[in-house]
Image 1: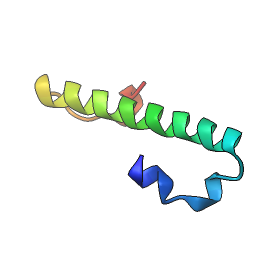
Image 2: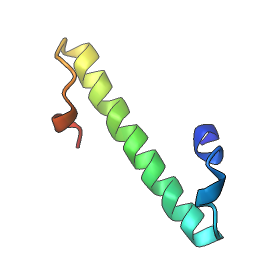
Image 3: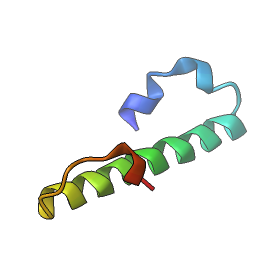
Image 4: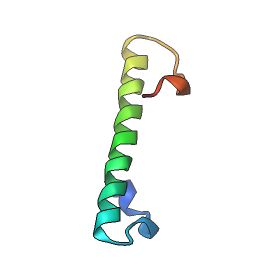
Length: 51
């Protein structure tokens, strides 16, 4: 969440800030999961396969 907090323009009000935090965490988690699959299964990173 430290990186997310550096974007001051997205925190217009509390509701929008919560929505952006959920989106931010979801994207970061999806990329992290795909990264782990690539590392532990020795596969190539492909943008199209990120859920």
